[in-house]
Image (cartoon, rainbow, N blue to C red):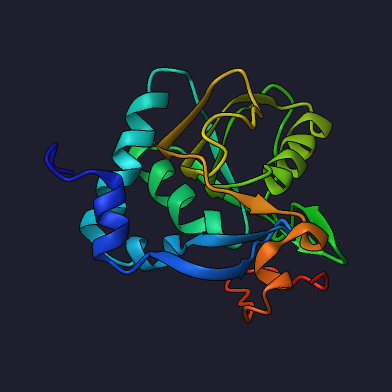
Length: 194
């Protein structure tokens, strides 16, 4: 990625930074949405973004990269490829985050969690629990976007390519809902809340 191009410019130029009224995967509402899939569909952006994450965590003895499905899979796979390590993902089954498809984590295995966007960190926290329950070792958490601007701390070693504070609201406190603005839920998990 060019030094003259900021991450925010990349998101804007690819139509990946949306304005409106959105229900986030966390269930919260916001007037801003990061559609990482739209920026990551471009190989040059995928490679450049993931190289920043991989460089940050290189030399830490990482053996496996794991991502929560579905948003983190593309990023996690490319970060793992650049680090030269195994990449797996966790997914929801009956509402619970699980490791399936023959993927495993071994006791003591050094694991890096990679996500596309962190708002509340709920999915990443569930993946961290899976790591701990397997007896594996959490090395850190990396993401493309941290909507909390660093307020959500999930690991001692945490890195995001783009950090900015983006306002979000509990559904019952959302001014966009009060104003009757139609809502969109472009995330990967369906939310039943308003």
